[in-house]
Image (cartoon, rainbow, N blue to C red; front, side, top):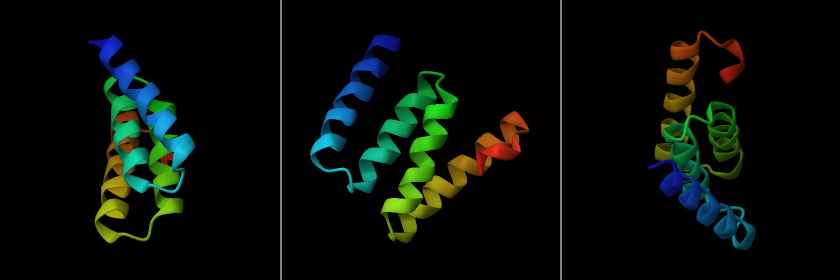
Length: 79
């Protein structure tokens, strides 16, 4: 299963090289990082999503995920 997440992460990363301002790539790669246990990388992608988009529904998802990670980890650096 981890291999599938690692392949997804690699694929999203390649897509981001082509279109680095596509916000959905940050969301989906961040979720793949999260599922693979790479919390810091997931947080970085969710934060970058907030930088590259003004779409309210995507921003809300990123903010919700970051807040959830903050609560789960008791980690103030999540935001």
